[in-house]
Length: 513
View (cartoon, helix red, strand yellow):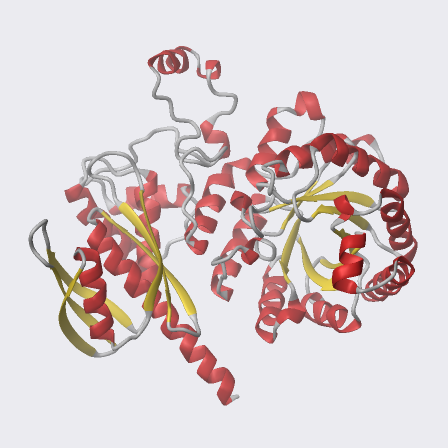
């Protein structure tokens, strides 16, 4: 490994696999393809597309992603079982740069309670599974699940077996977020010694103790040359190491860590917002790097310092990660070309029909708001996406309520080609309007989750609403933004109904086949 290679850290993004395992974060094929395209634009080295053996639909999703990604490697996860390996290879065999990612647990806890295998049997399984992968694919990653709770001597032995069988990457997962930086760094250093020049070592850290990024950086300092992470830190339980935080830590503190990635950080905010919109997980305002307040200054002392010299209170340039250099983007007098240009700057590719629809929404919003921010524009794009296709379209909504009065809601809903109007009462305007929508749609779906957040600051801010609904067998999500939160709630519920309808139709088609 030469010095240049030694300083380069590969970014392995598992948003589409481990990230999707976050409860409620299931994505459609179209959403996965959108995210994959943004990840490739961002410059990630490896996109883990999924776990193909999980279902025929999962295999097809991975195959579709493998078919469109050209610059990044596309990885498919599999256990050491032959059926898993064959399904994974079937999904990625046509990728420009395929990788098989094979794993088995190595901790005694997992061996005894889950696998019911001896250590010797696990070593044999590693040798067989990795060799089977290598016979199909030149790029093979081996992961020792629950590595940080494994006996270090046995872990080193397992990794040595994997290298001899043909593994090109050795991953040391902190599967349950148990490690602390100094011990994880020491473990990584030991595996780096085992790998030698035959493989690179990778870090995969979970955030159960809030240490995923710290552990990942400790791994890099100890010689790991691949970091596995998710956009916004989503993932199982408390999530994974946040891609944006790892990347900007390596970039900002190059003096301390001496390593770099191939990521173009100017796309970080756009990718973060897309993942937030697709999963329905609102971004906390104080989220490092990409949160709304990450570069906001309210303290007078801080404001004075930043105005005098930005670096007094900012260790990164906001524009470097994709934030606008100005807070006010456009106003109600702005034209279509200006809107189109700004959307392009924010990373959206819009055709004429899309621009016409978003422009109409933009003008309507401009009449209600004094200032239109980038976050408002992103909300408008989400609204457009939610109404492009679907059986249900909200035509009108009216509501009333008060301290002494029963809340009422009335809606007009386009159901296919039929326009249906219904009225209902409820515990509040939102409850009443959603009940009216259910009646108009003839749906028995019930509300499981409801979240509201402000898109921007100020009394005239749009409220973004996320809803989760279920018909008992199938779940769906919806989202919308509007300056009136009741209207936003209605739009989000209709968006979710359309998602539920699509899922139901797919289920019917699958049974028919």
